[in-house]
Structure formats: structure tokens, C-alpha cells
Image (cartoon, rainbow, N blue to C red; front, side, top):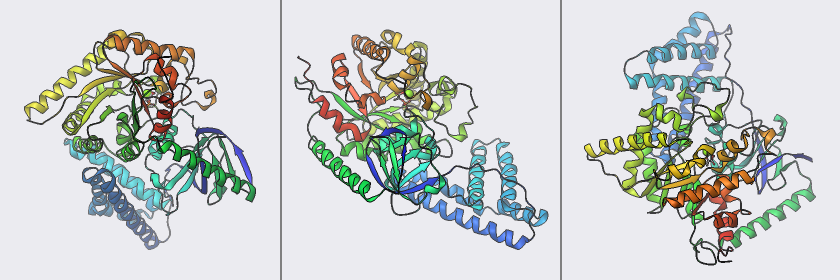
Length: 540
Ligand code: PEP
Ligand code: MG
């Protein structure tokens, strides 16, 4: 048995087999091949495998996000069937006697450049499809399966590092736990693990040899046991049983209101990143959705999601929440949340860089597409929208002007939409300091304590070396929250917290005493927070 200690990202116990994930780059080298027929056969097999993968992805997407979003995989299958594309590859293999990977990479470059040079927007967008399909074939030729879950048994994912776009592609039913070497406890991959309600660790130096071995992850203590001995195994099976019993007790809170002893009703909402999370939000009694991280839809896609695709997703969430408030946060891309097709430049200081509302106010085409989808979905439920990374009143006024334009367009096209409350995230010290002015512009505030802590304490939330001093309980952060609540209330705004701190039950009473109206937490934490709320007596 080997015990490795790291840092806990989320509590819980997982017992299962390890699946080691390694991300190698897609470097393609030109090689001379002796047997052309053998090489053509190799390419043909990779092509067939790619078609199979795309078929599986298509079926999964139809099930999970609907026909619209699934269409992209059909488009990719068409690329593989395209005669010009295939002829170009096979011709290169034959004429130049080179390896398939190189022929695919060259063809991909030639074809995508050709599409990029076209006038038509639709055709230009196809360049990304060609690159994506080609990368898939190259991965297969390299013998890489990517982070695709193939077996039927759920596994413990062990990796050097997982970025959010890799995490988001996982089949949630097949992951017992995440264990990584790199990554901070405040990163978005960590947040995803909490949303999935599974134990997770970071700071664990992992090795490829772990693949297939049995392990126990202790998310409370922050350690992993590889090939545990009998005694440890039995001890942890017992701990897992105890966890399940505690959970059962919490389950008794289902159906009971999130109300303090003296009768103050708290809006206890859930944070979600996809339609799939709505189920666990509802199962855990969410009073609404306090933060729908819409950027995850963008990160799951291989191209900009269309208005129709987004509309279907927002509508599904609104419908499933059946009249309960759904707060959709507009695209918060950038920093650690990346999607290739945005082609964002590398920055020296991405957390303070070109991200979130800064991109949306620049690329209003993307912003308007999303707003139209949100407004259209508002005809099917109680939708609110909020904007990330706000630092000025001017930004909010520019946003509101764009919102008015979107509404006008919908009206002119006779498209129905409902009343949509407008809110902003308070996650920069600037927004806190002018929260009195910002409150006059909007209906609600939602405090993003993850970024607010990062910017207030000048500590990069991605830097795992600073995890020990990233102190969200810092007096400066507490005062900022208090100030935001007071300023918001003066102008009639409701004020919530949607950062990870909202789930910190040691602070529930403090927040309620500050006057917080809403707490939005990962679905798995809803009942724990409800339990705490029901113990508070604000009259004392
Ligand atoms: C936050 O910053 O607290 C927040 C909720 O947003 P994110 O974690 O997605 O940046
Ligand atoms: Mg944030």
C-alpha cells in the first residue's frame, strides 16, 4: 500500500480503480514510410474509428443537450466523408510516401486556410470543423483516446493536470473522484468537482503506473491510498457507510423551508454549469438557480454555440425549474476558462486580462446572440441575467443599452419574451467600492467571492503555491461583503453570494446577520447549508 498526501478540493470518500489520464501534445512529425498500402490501411482504420467516436458523441449530445447542439457531430462526420478531403490525404501518402498523421495535418492546414479565406461566415466557420476532425484522426493515429470514458465501471481520474475544458467533457456518471498534481483548490476544475459532488484532491504527484490499480481517495484528509491493505480497505468502507448515513439524515430536510428560527426566509439556490446539473439541483431542493455558468456551454462546444442551441438549453433549464428563478450569468470566458475557437491571445496576467464582460462588450455579436437566446427562453420560466467582472457604472449602462437593442429586435420580429431581472456580479473591489452607484442600475447583486478574494488579496486563485494564504475569511473580504449588502439594500436590490464561500457553513450565520438574501451553492451542498440556516436565530 502506498499513501500519498495532497490537498483536499472536496470532501468525501471514493473507492475504485484508477484511470490515468495524460495529455500529450499533438506534435506531428513527417516520416517516410516504406509500405504505402500498409499506411493507407492505417489511415483507413483511423478514419473508421473517428466516425464511430463521432456517432457516439452525437448520440450523447442528442440525449443531453438536444438535436441542435448535436448537429455539429454530423457536420464532422460529413468532413470525414468529404471526397476532396480524403483524396488529398491519400494522395499525399501515395505520392510523397509519408505517414498518415503528417498527411492529415497538411491537408487540415490547406483546407482550413482555404475556408478561412472565404467571404461567407458559414463557410469560414467550417475551418474550425476541419481542424477539429483532423485532430481527432491524428489522436487516433497516435493511439490516444483523450479523456473519453469508455469502460462501464466508474473510475478515479488521476492526472497531472486537468483543465476545465477537459473536465467538462467527462461522463459524470463514470467519475468517482478527481486527483491531480497541478491545480489550485480555487480553480474552475475544482469548482466542477464540487458541482459534481465527488471527492477531489490536488497536489498529488501521480504516475502512469497507477493506471488500473485500486485506490481509496480521502477527500477529507486530502490523501490517496494506492492498493490499500485489508485493514485500510475495511476502515474506509466503514467511513463511506457513515457518510451515507449522515447524508440520509440531511435528506430529511428535503421539503422543509430554508428559514431561520425567527422566520427569515433565505433564497437557497444552486450553482450549475449545464442542463445535466439541474436534476441534482432539484433533487437537493434548490429554491432556484443562483448561478448558471454559461461559459461551460461554450467550452463544451467546438464552435460558437448558436442562438438556437443556447435557447434550447436555457429553455430546458427554465422549464425544469418550473417558475423558480434561474439566474444565467453571461459568458465569463478567459483566464482558466478557454475555448480554442475564441483564439484568445496568451496573456502575461490572464486573471486581470481580456475576459468576461470585457470580451462581450467588444464582440457584441457574440453577446447579442447569447442575450437573444436568454430573452427568448424567458418566455418559458422566471429568468434573470447577470454580468460578470463589472468594474464601472459605464459598463452597466453599455450593457443595458445592448439589452434594449436585443429586446427591440425581438419585438420587431414578434418574438415573445418575459420580464428578465438584471443583475451584476460583485467580484472586483472596484464594484464593491461603487456598489452604492451600481445598485441604482440593477435589480440584484451576486457576490463572486472566488474572484473577489483573488482581487482583494492580490492572490492568483490559480496558483496552488498560494492556496495556504488565499483566505476567503479575511477581514477585508468580510467587510466588502457587508458593504455590498448594505449598499444593495439601500436601493432595493436583493443581494446573494454565489462564490464557493456561500457553501462554507462556518460562515452561514455571519452572512445571515449581514443581511444576505440569497446563498447559491453547488447542488451537493444545498442540504448542508439549509441545515445551518435553520439553526440561526437572528432575533438573538
Ligand atoms: C466567483 O468569482 O466567485 C464566481 C462565482 O465566479 P467564477 O468562480 O466562475 O469566476
Ligand atoms: Mg468569478
